[in-house]
Each structure stands twice: as structure tokens, then as C-alpha cells.
Amino acid sequence: MHAIITGATGMVGGIVLQHCLKDDTIKQITSFVRRPSGITHKKLEEIILTDFTDYSGCEEQFMNVDIVYFCLGVYTGQVTDNQFKEITVNYTKVFAELLKKFSPEARFCFLSGSGADQAEKSRVSFARYKGIAENYLISQFANIHIFRPGYIYPVKKRISPNFTYRLIRNFYPLIKLFGSRFSLKSTELGMAFYKTGIQGTNQIVLENIDILKIKTT
Image (spheres, rainbow, N blue to C red):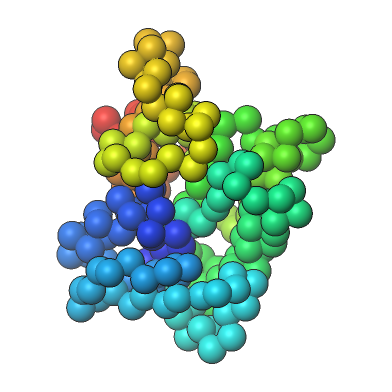
């Protein structure tokens, strides 16, 4: 199989990449990233993009694709509202248009988030823009799976994007007490994301509790 991964230098995308590298059924991996990952492997082709609305010269990489793991994104508050929309909506649409042209039957796994609003009316930018992206993908692909995790606990220590994320990380043991609807570990999400790409699921939208069920089956 041929898999495409976007955002493989990020928390979830990096975990998915490691699973794919170990999977003998995946013979080819194309990874679109903002910066080099430092990972080399005989079946990995890493393509560095400075503009995720321009895949000029990359059309060949979209041919004969079986699985897409779309993990590209940015944290709320890291960029302006216009930039957040550009990354969340426009990046998704441009990528999807190329995939639809060359590999329309590919299984598309999209990393969204809890609270995404498919009515596209939320006053919260994250919810509204994720909802727009979700709706577009559903309209384009029959084999689409949208992941809406709650709080993602980073198992591997990393630099938190802001104070709020650092604070929430410290309170994760308490958050976990609220049950499987609200949080999960990065490793749990990464495994479920990877497995869905390989074996599929009958659900289009997977909330936090659904993601954890995939991980444990």
C-alpha cells in the first residue's frame, strides 16, 4: 500500500509515521512536512513544503494512494484568525482536490477535534473552521473518517504551545477521571488513526469515545 502523511513532524503525525514504517503492508510512504523530520527509511519519501497551497511538481505523489493520514494543523492562539482558517480550511481543500483527481478511492483519515461544528455557525473559530473542512471532505470522498479527539495528553514530553496547554497537561490525571468522552493519550490516538487507515471503520465521524474503542480492539 501507498500512504500519504501530512504533519508527520507533529505529535500525532509522528506516531502514525512510526507505525507505518513498521508495517510491512505499507510499501511506500509520502510525507509532506514543513521542516525535516530527521528520519530516513527506504520506503519514506519526505517532501518539504513552504506553502501547503502549492503542490507544484508533486502530482505524481498523489497517484495510486491507498491511505491518507491528514494530521496537518495548528493550535488555536498560535496564529491570527485568517491564518488559522487558511491552515484549517484552505490547506485541506487544496490537498483534497489533488487527491480526488488522482486517487479518489483512497481512505482519508482526517484529524479534526472535539466540538467541530458542521453547521458552520459556531462563534468559536476552531469549531467553525473544522466544521467547514469536515463538510468539504465528506462531500468529496466516500471513504472518509473524521477524528474528533478531546484533550490529547502528550505521552512524549514536548514544548507546550502556550501556558494553557502546560496547565492542562498537569491536570490530566483529574481530566482522565471524567471518562473516555473527554481525553486520551497521544499514543492511543496515533494507534487508532493508523489502524483505521489500514482496516477502515463503518463510522464517518469518530468522537473521543469511539477513538478509544478502536485502539482497544
